[in-house]
Image (cartoon, rainbow, N blue to C red; front, side, top):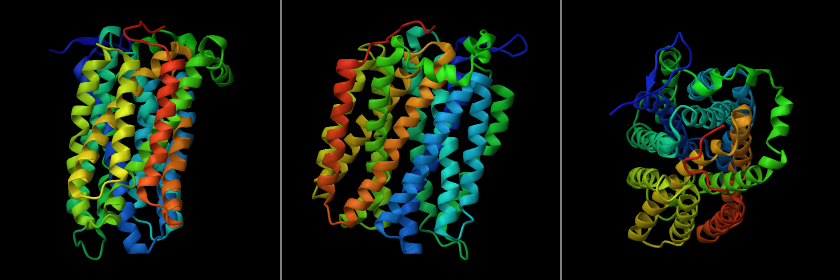
Length: 414
């Protein structure tokens, strides 16, 4: 049953919880489709352009550099011009840049466009979660934000399916990976729908004085004594989660090829592992309002660490597939909880800034993750040792949550 939960102004019709979730979620799904396709495109480009492992790592890392810049800039401006406006801008930016990247013929230009793709993606995700957090009641806020994040699995699945059927196909004279990237430009058209149907955060529109605060005052505000511990906790957790996620997941197809499975076969296995993300999200969505944010984050991150260790050391397809499924289940469940947890740490006037800066710090981890894998593989390190590094980093994040984090289950937002 759909409740009416938000109204941005007297000139905007109320929007139901389910409609808000659907409108924001489909934009989220398109983002995931682009990221998923990138992991497959990296493997295809390595074959078409003769890229080495370090160059492959730079493709993922330049995306994360853009995400760090985008999360910082757009998160800050979400507190100045509104959540909805930034949501639209970022969606258009990443869509257009992603579509243009299909036309490139040089590695350098491809990297430049992937930077702008990353800017749009990095800015949209924390702003969208902040918008939804401010638009639903406290008793179901965490669950709804995790369900928003579950659209990521749908986008990953869509991206994997497109990659499986499109990238290996013969579209002479156009390579399959170019056709796949052209499809990622579709969200630009969706932005028009968002502009017509999505109201802004009712909390933000009810507090016009928030727009009068300076950007620098908002940035300093997240380090005020009252919020400093929360900021430190978020920065640590975001860094290790993004570092491990992009280090592992962008390399999944390539890792499977390195373990002896063909490129086309690896797409099929990754599709199966992607399906495991959905129950990860749904169980986290159920638990987050029952057991709390900290419990879900700690439990699912520990599950991620254990699964990553087994995956990195797997020597059979059965173990590889089973550990990959568990890795997807736990890791994406933890992501959902993190997106729910982050906006709850700050009051309205600095919420976009706080969430955006935490995500920006996380994206710095996303820069180093893929580069680390590429460089270590180039020096002869084995996947098992590399994935053990990710396991250790995740445990550091777990300790930060346990000893520094505060529980925000069903706490009313200021």
